[in-house]
Length: 90
Image (cartoon, rainbow, N blue to C red):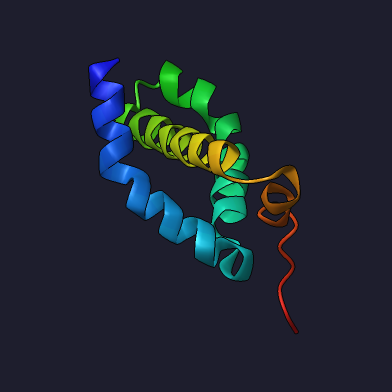
């Protein structure tokens, strides 16, 4: 619990910065799409003992969780929805 508080305090500024830029960049959505596309490979990686891939997937999921925790606690539902409705401009 104390470590979690320290982590939140250390990452809050990064999360807020991403929250401000994400509606323009779509970075959170991209990270989630990459994570979801790579999850199919996790079972194979575990069987092959590809610890690097598993570690990368774990870190991506951890980052997504940290970001979503900040987003959910500090945004309205409408603001949060903007972060998942990014469309590239032509």
